Amino acid sequence: MGPLIPLGIIDASWNNVFAILLGIAFGFILESSGFSSSRKLAGVFYGYDFTVLKVFMTAALTAAIGIYYFYFLGWIDISMIYVNPTYLGSAIVGGVIMGLGFIMGGYCPGTSYCGAAIGKIDAIVYSIAMMAGIFLFSEFYPLFENFYNSGYLGNVTVYDTLGISVSLFMIILVIISLAAFYATSFIKKLVKKVEY
Amino acid sequence: MKRTYFILVTILILLTLGLFVLEAREHNDKITPVELLTDLIENTRYVTCDELASRIIEGDPSVQLVDVRDPYDFMDFSLPGAENIPISDLCTETGEELLNAPGKDFILYSNGDVDANKAWMISQRLGYNRLYILKGGLNNWIKTIIKPQPPAESQPQDAFDLYEFRRGASQYFTGGNAPITTDAPAQEINFERKKKKSAVEGGC
Image (tube, rainbow over all chains, first blue to last red):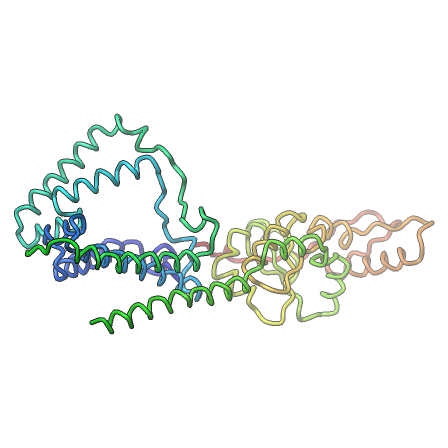
């Protein structure tokens, strides 16, 4: 039956409409969960607030488990689900850069727009700086091109690489996540409480 | 608060365990490569031209011929009662509708064996049942049924019986006006041509 757009059940021209609707819903939920505060977001690095970790891990788990329920029940064609290609070299360096930016600015790309939308000056500065970064990267792309495409592994998934079944991988991921959530409660107790 | 967490964690773990059950069930539904290989090695999927001819002549209602060639070739010449599903259309609704028809033996044919075999593999993988292939395809059909060659004098009686059957079948399929005998001069054979008003639609 699904995915609805790649199989032509819903016309591809609806793509942008869904993107806008989902984007608005996502932004609304981020804002109402307090994710437009850079202090709350940076808390995950300083150890006084782990909401970000919990929310995003739970979201990823729910989506992953949900997608495989759909697949096993025959509602979607899993081969048509887009799997982001892995570029090992650029993924590692990109992750480090993104992490540094996250600690310094207290936002990730999505939440910076969220903060900008409610008029937070740091978020507005962050969004503009991000645009400048994208512009510079695009301009100097030929310099980075070789590295950008390095360590290409194709559209791989972790469970295929490890050679285990999806269900086994999911249960391992759930256990690791729950253990991480539990461990963060201890870290939170050790760290001085921050008011924000 | 603590209790809510406990309930939510339990639900999450139970749902994840549910994946194991569903995954096991899913694997049972699919044709494994080993099963496919076994089916491929065993030649039970083939139907000979003689078998097919006799089934058509007897009016066997379970025969459903499936022409997997291009619509252009199909319009040019096809077997009586055949439906055209080019290989490229197998995965579309047209193919699904026909191959899901109950109580039919689907006999796939192309000019030779190759395309019919391809179509057979894909259809098998798509989970359709009762799929067969016309051995030798239309080339063999023309050679054995439409233009049968008389056996040599030294051949056993069976060969002559078969030849008689083929000659009869040839008359049946060519309109009954072309008795082919060895001494009669070669006559033009009138194939039964299926005229189609429009090309077969399909494709996604």
